[in-house]
Image (cartoon, rainbow, N blue to C red; front, side, top):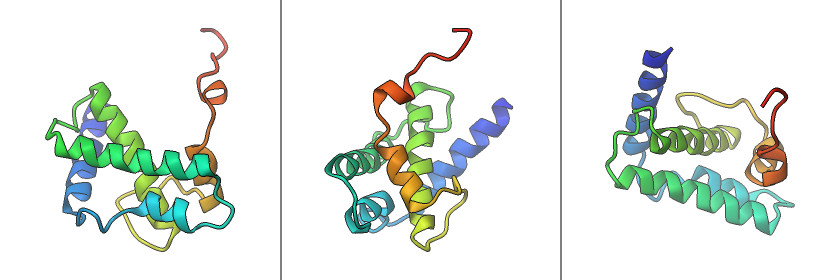
Length: 119
């Protein structure tokens, strides 16, 4: 399982680095062009995509099982899936519609950080 996560991280880093910086703004494009997008969704989508770019620029080992590597994988899932939802392609997809991705971007802390049973 650990080797699968490392391999996924390597693939994400290579795919994102091969994308032309500034041209692959999939999540930013989604939040700015989808009708009915809220100001919170626009702000959050832009911030998520910028975080991915900043992590690449920091030249850390994004394939590592570290907090930075995990954050990179999570934001990359949203960015790549947003591009696919708009007709693009990518190495993987969350298989989410534009509406689902926008809801994921705006998820409130109360919903996303709710304790699970048994914790």
